[in-house]
Each structure stands twice: as structure tokens, then as C-alpha cells.
Amino acid sequence: MSNRRQEIRFGVIGLGLMGREFASAAARWCHLLDLDFVPRITAICDTNTKLFGWFESNFDSINLKTTDYHDLLNSSSVDAIYCAVPHNLHEQFYTDIIRAGKHLLGEKPFGIDLAANERILNVIEANPNVLVACSSEFPFYPGARRVIQYINEARFGKIIEVSAGLLHSSDLDPNKKINWKRMVDINGEYGCMGDLGLHPLHIPLRAGWMPSRVYAALSKIVTQRPNASGELVPCNTWDNATLSCDVQIGDQHFPLTIQTYRIAPGETNTWYIRILGTAFSVEYSTKYPKTLRTMAYQSSREQAWQTVDLGYETAYPTITGSIFEFGFPDSILQMWAAFCDELAHGRSGMQQPFYCATPEETHRHHRILTAALESHTQQQVVTLS
Ligand SMILES: NC(=O)c1ccc[n+]([C@@H]2O[C@H](COP(=O)([O-])OP(=O)(O)OC[C@H]3O[C@@H](n4cnc5c(N)ncnc54)[C@H](O)[C@@H]3O)[C@@H](O)[C@H]2O)c1
Image 1 (cartoon, rainbow, N blue to C red):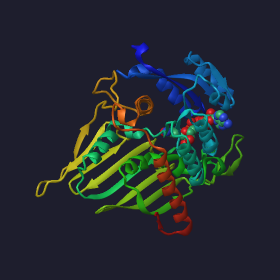
Image 2 (tube, rainbow, N blue to C red; image 1 turned 45 degrees about the vertical axis):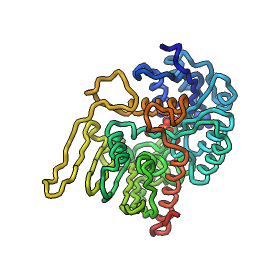
Image 3 (tube, helix red, strand yellow; image 1 turned 135 degrees about the horizontal axis):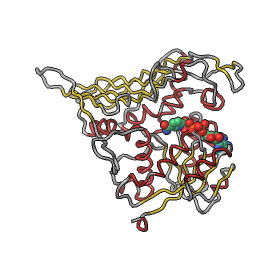
């Protein structure tokens, strides 16, 4: 079997939270069934050399470890790169990777701001032979896949409203130490929106629901935090954002509400989407990861929401029994399979139709987040052309 599989040799830049999550997905590629491609981690890079040990002890395929990412770009044993570094480094790293002819699965927000994102897109345009995509895994959850299916089937009738969000709670703790994600110069002016915004926007943008107008309510709730030595320092990033958007698509005109909260009491990485329509409605949240709620409306019939327990329904088949539960590492594995599938077969030849978030989708999300900042500054609705 392995002889017939196309090996895609990956370098990982940024070996932190996400770098390890990705590598772990490679380590259990055997979970996936009948794929004719397989990733191999051949090179790793981080300025923090203490992070090398976990990788080296788990991957004997690594032949290059370095603190300088250029070494990966110059390596003939690297075909593609997963890059998970702080936002202020995205532009330089991503454009260098693409210019070096390496395929790239980058992380959101794909540039610290709109200008950086546009410079990345310019380099992508000049290098059309390189596949570039952005990591966004939630659409691979079984419940999210059902939502996408219903959108594709145009089940909703007239859409009444759409809301989606990503909610965290750990920043409720004022004693949580500050890190780069709470520093404007490294994380970016978007704050929580840059960190979390692509997740709730991915499916609406894939559906073509680009807002025409945005009004943003942004809040800073914890304004100072202890640094590594315990001294209180300013924490200037936005903690929470609610974007009230208008979507106008053909004869459909509906509100789209996007919540990105770092301080949502009790929530641990809760991703949700709810679409209400005149004919059909659906609601899915990773808070109850098996539970899908739907309601089909029939005139003069009682209105009743249905609840169904979803099993392990995946884009790419796996060894897991269909009644078992799906979780975050599974969504990373599925997303990575989609990236490798597109790399191996082209978008039109993929085994299933849902491809990873595109650079163009990251650009649309940057336009929305930039409009949100402007809306907050001006305290008014901002129109997107
Ligand atoms: N898809 C998701 O669900 C998800 C979740 C969390 C974070 N992210 C994104 O992933 C990216 C990384 O976030 P993280 O949570 O893994 O951060 P992290 O801080 O855990 O890891 C970042 C790593 O980059 C390394 N680094 C910093 N400067 C470097 C340099 N010059 N060269 C090489 N390595 C360098 C750091 O040492 C660190 O190990 C961000 O873009 C973030 O928004 C995505």
C-alpha cells in the first residue's frame, strides 16, 4: 500500500500549540482509509530549540532541525510547509515560502492586517504553481458538514438570519499571564477578531455571503495582565467583538452576526453556526459536538425542532466506527487530508468537494475585520464595496 502512495514531505515552521497539533495528525495518518497520499514531516523550525525534543522523539523522518526557516526553503527534502507563527511574521514567512516554490498551509489571519494580506496575495498571484491555503478546521466537523450540505442544497427557503461565532473563556482570569496573542504589535490591531474571526466566517464566505455593511461592537475587558515576572502591564488587544453585518445576495437580504469572544464565561473553544430560514433552519455548536438541531417548516403544521446525534461522519473515510464521537484533532486530520488531496489531485480531482480556506477567502475576512475596526473608530456602520 505505502509504495503506491504519493509522499508529501512537509516542513513545520513554528512548533508551538498548532505545530504540534499538526504533527500529531501526521503521526496518525493510518487513521485515514484508502488515500493515495501521505505526509511526512522531514524538517522542523523554531527559534525555541527546547521544542525540538518532542518532535525528534516522535518522528524519525525528520532530517533537518533549525532555528532559521530559510534552511527549510533551501531544502530539497521539503515539498510543502505548515507555518504556525505569530501574526507579525506571517507576511515575511509566507511570501518567502511561496517565492521558494514550497506549497503552503498557513495559519490565520494570513497577515497581521489587510495590507499584509494583500501583499501575500500578490506573491501568490505571481507564483501560480504553488498551492496556498489557510488552516480552518471547524467546517470538517460532522455537524458543520451537514450545515454546508444544507447550504449547497439551498434548503433554507428565504434566509431569515445567520449567526456564527467562536467563544473562549480563559481570559476571564485576570491573572492569566500576557502572551503575544494579547499584544497589538505581534497579534495585530484586530485582537480577538484576527485570532478567531476566520473560524466563524469561513462557511458564510464559502456560501458567498459577503456582507455589504458592518457595524462592530468591540470591547476591552481586562486591560492589564501580569507579564512573565508577575508585573502588571497593559493588555491592549480587543477581548470581544460582535459584528452585525448585512448580507444582500440576489433577492436575499439578511443579517449575519459574527461573535469572536475571548471572554465568554464558561466557553472552551465553542464554535457555532445557526441559520434560520423560512423553509428550514439548522443549529450546530461544538459545545454539544454530536448534536445537530434542525427544523423543517411546513405550513399549518406544528413547528418542532428535531435533535439528532451525529456519528463520525467525515469528509475522508477513517477506521473509526460510525457511532463514535468526533473532536478537534479529528478536524485537523481531516483538514490536512483536504490540503494534501488538493495538492495531489488538484481541486477538481479531490475525493470530496470541500477544499481548505483559500487566500481569497482570507482577503474577504480581512476586509470585514478592517471594516469592523473602522466601524468602531467612527462609531458607525461601514459599507463594504
Ligand atoms: N487553526 C486553529 O484553530 C488555531 C488555533 C490556535 C492558533 N492558530 C494560529 O496558529 C498560529 C500560531 O499560533 P500558536 O497558538 O501555535 O502559537 P504558539 O505561540 O504556541 O507557537 C508559535 C511558535 O512560533 C515560534 N516562533 C516565533 N518566532 C519564530 C521565528 N522567527 N522562527 C521560527 N519560529 C518562531 C515560537 O517560538 C512558537 O513556538 C497563529 O497564526 C494563530 O493564529 C490557529
